[in-house]
Image (cartoon, rainbow, N blue to C red; front, side, top):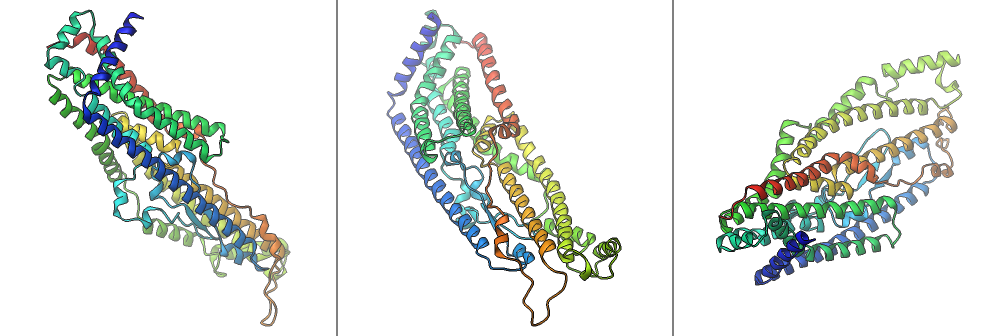
Length: 483
């Protein structure tokens, strides 16, 4: 208890000395104002995006059901839309969401990519990043910590009070821990109110009805950000304790902040893209088209692959023309064509995703060197605003598209006659009541366990950094000198 008492006294004294500097009030108020603005902009963005998605998803559903009697294959080409709703935690962590589309047009025989991203309708200022609560916590608060803590020990050494402190029965470990607690107490004046506001907004967005999955995500979001900020408190004190002057400590800490939050993240992205180059969108689509043509064109009656299918069907059913088959031949061929084209697309997509996975794995590996990257990846994962969440949305939409096309083909096989109508006959159609067999698309975000599995590297790297810093505190306590 005596040891703890001394550390608390050191922390309290340091906190009081910090607030003697009027500049800290200005910086704190500025960051506090940014946090309020980030909370408001996140709330507004979440509400507007989800209201828009719900509106157009509902309209798309109504348009689909209001279609008149028609050929099912025409309905498959009429298509549908898939919209991606934001999760509640995306209010605080925008991640990559502004750069990814949130709507996909779904149609037979064709896989489209997501469109209508916020970046697509914004000016070039968006590339500098948006102000979110996560950005303030991950970038600006560490800078505040360094500003508060750069002279925590170095100033004591400069004015000679360090020797006096150490001669009064306080050891280096107590001094370092006391200074860390002192910096943490200053930062908590911003962090705790931010978390209170964050939780309140989060509850309001969900009408105080939350799932266990969302609750775990929120707890992890808060807990890991707390650990992340404590990391910078420890770094600030260790650098200050090992520096001869406050000026050197400040320069060193600003350099560390620039490397961790500005230089390394952009450098690793560029290196990853250079080492593992992905094909362009044009090349990707061209390669898919070439492979589909090799397999056969389901719309070409003379295609070798589909002619062989026709001949085998005629033999099995012992008829001499497709018009005599007991089911709709065209629908059967469209079903086969959809299966082949989807398999080819999924194969090319998996190959492309492996390239992107290699690019991202390089960035994730760097998180062992840079805790900021680890925290950013984990934060985006918990908020479902990371790259993996975007790909998950595309896969869910593609599965829905494939099921839609095949169900329409199934209706054609079952209800449409092989006999083609004459020039004066009505087109072959089925009743519009059949359109209801296609359910409405609903995007399901990744669960917390899927996120943790994906971001296991980030979690391990953050925990290893914390362990390393406490080891460094022990080493520093034994080797640091008062002069």
